[in-house]
Image (tube, rainbow, N blue to C red; front, side):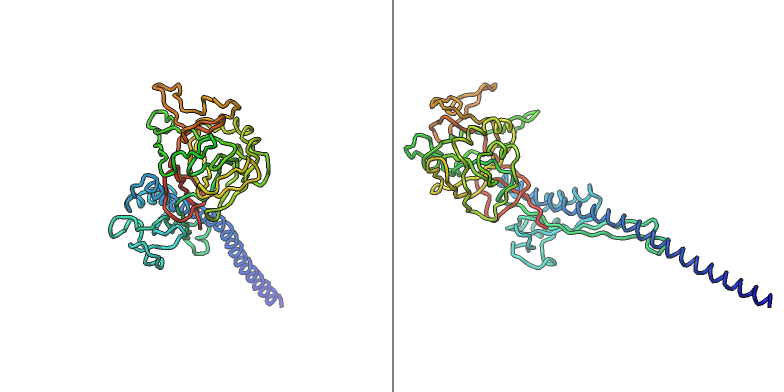
Amino acid sequence: MHRLARRSQRRAEGQILVIFALGLIALLAGVALVLEGGNTYQNQRSVQNGADAASEAGAVMIAKGLSTGVAKTDGEVASAVGSSAFFNDITVTAYYTDWQGNPLDPAGTIVAPNLAVVVGASPSGAVPPNARGVHASGTRTFGTTFGRVIGFNSFTATADATAVTGPSTGGKLLPVVFPVNITDCSQNGNLGLPKNQWDVSQPSTATPPGHPVGTEYIVPLCKTGGGSFMVLDLDGIKNNCEYEVLHPRTTPFDHFPIDVDSDNGNNCAHQMVDAVNSLQGETVLIPICDDNDCNTSGGSHASYHITGVVSFYIDYMDDSNNPNNSNCQTHYNADTPPQQLVTIAGNGSDACIAGWFVRFISAGPVGPGTVENADAIGVQLIK
């Protein structure tokens, strides 16, 4: 009996040891999964960020070609994508897309992804016609630590992203509007230079960088009459123009043209002076309206037919009741050598904004169509 009891006891102890060992393995496996899960999530987010950056780098290079009017080559786009991928420690394959993210073949026709032109392998060495974006697929294989306990030596994280470029359809906008044919302020219907004749300035080559190189325009801020300046209400709150300048909301327009309500012109223009002048040396986005629908109707309760967005490098804003305000008429500044400021409409006013029209690439929503003179260019991550 005693022998049988001892055998039963040893058998039970052996079973407990087996159960404990199995439980310990399960516990270690669970801990390994938790720890490796965190490591995997961190790598997945890192790869997604890397894919985003790679696609945006390619889109920015295409945007630079739109900005200068000289198309970038496939090699230049590939170099930008590759450099971004290397910096983010991922492996990337990429192909060209249109502005909506659709894959393109060498002729610029929408095709299935497997038939799209691979970035860095364009048959002609050129970016396909209509190409406005880059789709990037990123991967990273990383080793495990505790995962080896349960037989997993490595995992692979993957992510996709598409970034596109084109004419801006919104962004952080200055709450004003410029007509495409900016009239003078004499109320006689005289037109200034049309948009396609505005001199688009180039970046400064000085060290440190100064203002753009090109014509500095004085844009008259007329209060009444067709084609005149007006303040826009972009946030739906009236008479907060100074706040809108200093705290611009990212305003996306789904399409152009679009009607946008005005704010109180006489009141807001005066409020905005200090706020706009605090932006001296910065590039802002300004909506533009067409010739036929740029009428303030006395300065309030108007809406404007917005047709696009331009980029403008701010020098100063001036709002005075003096009809002979010298700051708003063609004059020379105090630079060395002196630079001439040209009133874009030929006839000054008692209020104006002075600065340079520039080609400026910014983050923001984009639309279809060609990039026209002075148009702002956006880069948008769409997926």
